[in-house]
Image 1 (cartoon, rainbow, N blue to C red):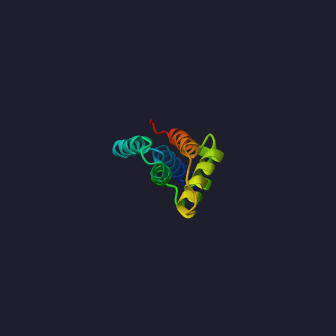
Image 2 (cartoon, rainbow, N blue to C red):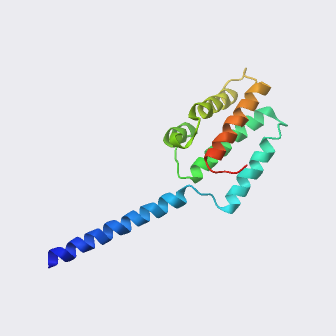
Image 3 (tube, one colour):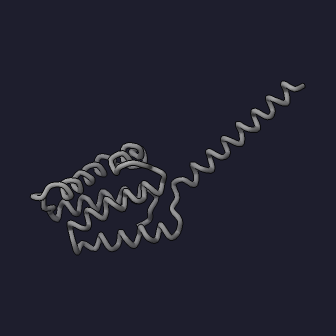
Length: 134
């Protein structure tokens, strides 16, 4: 009799654990309405194309921000490695991030209009992959 009760308690605890994990997973990848609005507004401002250098840097920071809100930790590179399954074109996201790195670390690097267009297209697609409606 005690064995049957122990088994029932174990299954109840396991069931509760599965329900908690499903709840966490379901809610982990969602932004609040305020955060969603913030991301959309930031995207609108940076994609206006007024400052090519700033657009690249800010777009990269925006992806980093959203990944952080989804629970990914570490540097942007570490977050991309952990979240790579989310993106439909992870190679484009990496290429865009590398352009950002060149811009941030190489004094002689000056992005072209094509570079900016590529970065914004890649990061825009990445945001949509992250369920952000732009």
